[in-house]
Every structure is written in structure tokens, then in C-alpha cells.
Amino acid sequence: MKESLYIFRDGQLRRKDHTLLFETADGKRYVPVEHVREIFLFGEVDVTKKMLEFCSQKEIPVHIYSHYGYYMGTFYPREHHVSGYVLLKQAEHYLDPSRRLALARRFVEGALDNMLNVLRYYKNRGKAVEPMQEAIESHRREVETAGSIEALMAAEGHARQAYYQAFDAILEDEAFRFGMRSRRPPRNRLNALISFGNSLLYSAVLREIYHTQLDPRIGFLHAANFRRFSLNLDVAEVFKPLLVDRVIFRVLGRRQIQADDFLHELGGLVLRERAQRVFVEEFEKGMRTTLQHRRLKRKVSYRQLIRLELYKIQKHLLGDEPYTPFVSRW
Image (tube, rainbow, N blue to C red; front, top):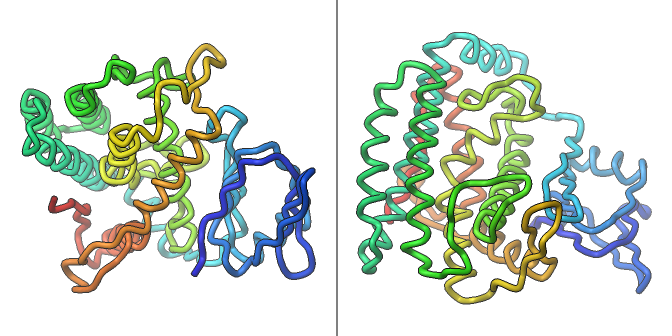
């Protein structure tokens, strides 16, 4: 079974015959390429041209993160699943304001419904999240009537702000107060965790897009402008409450990550390597978690669920079936 390869140490990654070799000051480690789904580089890693060519042949994206855990970019291999017809349909939907808005609305509705399910779960466990729940439900109604992408994003932004405020009631930890959303650099510990988790999810969705006929450069909620990729940002909105926020609640609730796991750098806070490793491990567990698929009537992992979500979007673009986002039942 293929797995994501996370490299935190400094060294050199290169091709060695028909496999990958990671070499550090302490020694060599051979990585069978047929077991690698994608590569995340967090350490100071030198890569060779032959290694990138090899990854392209094997359809392995390479995600690059800075020393501080910030996402820097992806080596996106030559595409093997391109379809001119799907690309035209994707562009048609983007260029038609009504069709773009209809699809973008589905992403926001899915995101908000999953946020509400998270809050219902914690409300049933005695957490004081009802005011935030009501605020999100109010913004959910605004989403249904939003007449433009800008109005849709404003409603989504207000709902997400209310949702993040609920983190304080759920966590009840002064060291991890939300305050307000801040990025690059995150101004506090909770924002640092949110940013790090979101960047992992964006990369994971991008990898799944690579194995469909969809073009990651054309999103619908997020504008397809000078940004390299945007469709992965759209799809990630639906899954953030389930795959990122649940990890945050888990690692903080179990005290796997604590206040001293952060460094003051670049005017903000970043996770120490130990905390990054803990978060990545829990994130991967979440991606491997299985649930019963309502239509397929079999268990699928969350990673497979993301791929299935992309196929649903493709069917929508081709006019086969209107897209409805995945909403958890818990």
C-alpha cells in the first residue's frame, strides 16, 4: 500500500537505480518508490534532477515546506490523466457567473454543514458552543441567497470566524486562545496549528486532483487568477472541519502538543519539529480512518472520500449529476 513520505531531517534525496535514496550525515535509507504516494519535504533537503524526473515518471508530487513549516510549493509532475473535454467544461463553468456561483455555493454549504456537525458533537458533550452554532446557521441562510462570489465569501468568512470562536469553548485552554484569524505569520499557537493543518490538507487534496482529469488551476470559490492552484482550496473547505480541526482538538485534548512546542520566529509563532511530527502522524491517521459510504455501501477512507468528491465534481461539470458536498453524519 502506498503511503505519504514525510522528511523532517536534512540530507539529500536522489534516485538510486529503481528506487529512492535519502542520505544524511548519519547514513543512508532506501525508500521503495512503489510504496510512495507523495513526498513532503520539511527538512533542508537537496534533490537531484534525476530524482524529480523519476518522481514524474512514477506520478509522485513533491510538496516543499520552509524551515518554519510554511507551504512553499509543489513539484507537480507531468500530468498523465489530462482530458481536453473536461478542461473545456471546467473553464465553461468558471466563465459563466451563474454556474460558477452555483458550484461555489455547494463548497461553502458543505463546509458550514460540517462545521455545524462538529459543534453539535461538542454541544452534546456539554461545551458552550450554542451562540456560535446559531451564528453559523444565520450565515448559512445568507449563503443560500448570496448573489455573487464576493457575497458568498463574506458569508463564509463570517461563519468561519464564529466557528473558530467556538474553539475557545471547546478547548478551554488559555494557552490556546483563538483571538482572531492570522496567517503568515500566525500570531498565536492556535492559529499556527490551523495554518499548518490546512496546508497539509491543501497538499493532500492537490495530490488527489492529480489522479483525476480535473485541472487544479481552475477553482470556483477561489478565483483562478495568478494563483498556481485553486481547486484544491475549494475542495479542502469541505473537509477542514473533519480532517484538520478534529486533529487540533485531539492533539491538544491529549496534551500531545503543548504551549512550549512553539517558537517565536518571523514575527509570529511556528511549530517546533517535534510538534510538526505529532500533527502529521495524527493527520495521517485521520486520512486513513474509514467510514461506511452511503451510496457505495462499503467502507472507504477519508483519502478515498476526497477522490470520490472530485469525481462528483467532474460529473457535475459534464452534466451527469449535480454536485452535492460530503457532509458527515456525526
